Each structure stands twice: as structure tokens, then as C-alpha cells.
Length: 275
Ligand SMILES: [Zn+2]
Image: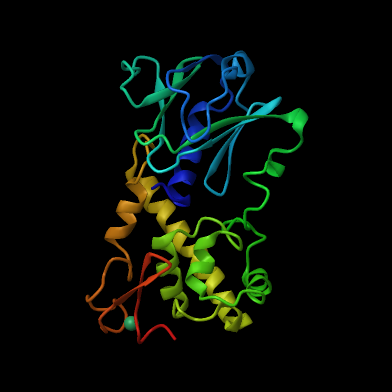
């Protein structure tokens, strides 16, 4: 499943390739994604210029001025920008093409849990959209720091790792990145969130940002055409500190890495480095 770093890599790639281009037409071959792709998408977008590609959580926001195309990659979606001459015949999972001047943005999604929705600017700012309004803070933004994390933790009586995964405090800390960030911060994943003091929250906020930045850097350098489904996670995993390393020696102290299940998800941690 694409995680925040991969979505950010896709965003950067699309922004550099497609921004400033005008849409010629939209072709929807299969509208049945997680929610139906709007019938009128071609009418909404034809002639419009792509002003920016932004991201909120794992949603990509294609800003066309008079409205925003909201896209989510779901479990298995990816976008490719195919320049003139590179456009091949669509495969059976290539559900949507947005044809620009000199290039086509193609959406492929074998499992069809992704989404593509239209939000006209007459309905207010896109960030107030029901899918976006209740998302936690962006981990790579200036607003995210230890103080914010500490304030949010005070009302949370559960274990820290599921709190991070839930996305209500901070978005984008998926299963791999939660284990990795907690290891870097020296915090045991079962620690009750509200018992984590300000200094440890500072460390955790820093660790989350570093972990995600590193994953973006790694993925960005290996994904040539920024076609991303699980490329970045794969690369990251190969270099992980604790994730998927149960029984192997901790890279810092040599103690065997342990694993437990927390809310049906695997967690990895070092019993010596994390308290
Ligand atoms: Zn250790």
C-alpha cells in the first residue's frame, strides 16, 4: 500500500512534469473505484490548466483553479506521466487518462480501492472537504513539533504505536514508519501515549520527520519515472532499523529485535534501546 513518502514522491514528480499544462480531455475507462469517478470529469477539466499538485495526508490534490481533483492511490494505485511518444495502449487496469498538451497522466489501479473526486472551488476550500477536514497535522510541516505532539497525547490513554497509526494526531506514519520512528526516539511502542513527557515528544517528532524524510529521499532516488506503488516502502524496508527484523540483532546494541501484534498490525522494537 502506498504510504505518505511514496505519495510525496509521486506528487513531486507530477508537479515537475505536469504543472502549467492544459488538459485536452479526460478518458474514464472504468469509473468504479472506491467511489465512482464523476461522469462529467472531462467537462470539468477540459481546457483547464494544472496550477499545482499538492498533498494532504495520502491524498493528492490537483489544483485547477476553479476546482481540485482529489485523488487517492488506495491499496494498489499509481500515476504515470507519459510524455508524447511514450503512450502505450492502455492495459486492463489503466482506468483513467487525463490527456494534457504533450503528455498523458494515466491512473492504474488493479484493486480499485483508489479514488478520484472533483471538488469545485464554489464549495469552499478543498481542505474543508469531508475526507480531509479531520486529518491530523502534516508531519513535514512547520506546525508539527514536540509541543503539538505532547498536547495531543494528553487525551490519549492507549499505547503510542496505534495512536500514531490512527492518523488523527499526525498523518502519514504508517506501520513501517511507526516502528522505525519509535526506535529512533527510544520509546517502547506499548508506552501509554499520555505518559510520554515533553522531552520524549520532542524526540519523537524529530524521529518521525527524519524517518519520513529519509524514506522520501531513498524512494526519490530509486524511482526513475516516479511510478510508485510500493517502491519506496520496499527500498526503505531493506534498510530498516527494526521493521521486519524480528530475531535479528539491533543495529545499535545487538539485542535481538522483538515483534508483537498491536491492533492486528506487527510492531518491531528493541527491548534494550526502547524504554
Ligand atoms: Zn537496541
